Amino acid sequence: MPAPIVVMPGTGSDADYARRAFGPAAAELGRPLVALQPEEDLVGGYLRVLDRLAADAVGEPILLGGVSIGASIAAKWAVAAGPDRCAGVWAALPPWSGPPEASPAAASATATADALERDGLDATVTAMAAGSPKWLADELSRSWRELYPGLIGQLRAAAALTGPTAPQLATLRVPLAVVVSTDDPIHPADVGLAWAAAAPRSAVGRTTLDAWGADPALLGRLAARAWAQVCERGPVG
Image (cartoon, rainbow, N blue to C red):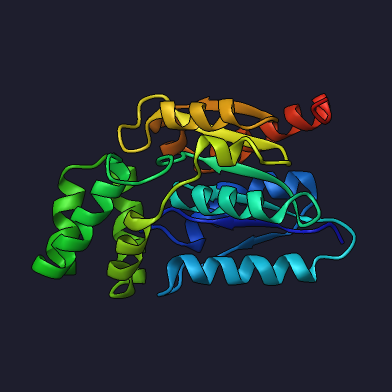
């Protein structure tokens, strides 16, 4: 059996969404999909599972996918793991590089955690839904209720994560597929484009909020297409 594609959702999202985002593309490649559910120990939990799945893979390394903070964790793990354990990274909507302080995504995660502690789940969900597109409000209303109360710690852990830097990405020895949304203020396209520019082997897929909001599987298909483009070019040098 081929090694799996292991995917991680963005902060506040869950395995259900990651499965819908990447599952169709995994099926088209004939690879099993493993969608990780965030734990209370968000970053450490993901890293432990990635290490275990990489050790269990037989014959070929695992392929990683992630949305937002999931993309950051995937990229950082792949840099350390190398091509013996990782076949590539599908990074959808990278949130930031390096320290998180100037990132809209980190600020949003912190503000949401603050609101949950101050106002409670129902009021925070209502406020989020009032200012979000309907598809996003529906998704987050479902996942936040599923993840709460552990969601608060997950948001704070994500907001504190140092993202992959350009020098780190320059050492990435596997193909990097980046998917950016050209009109997402929380996940600026410039961040993803900078990731791709820093990595030795990369390609970029582009979408919009409305397009991937209507079809979550578009993220995975764009990532799979970009990854295939990089693989077709072969190694650098």
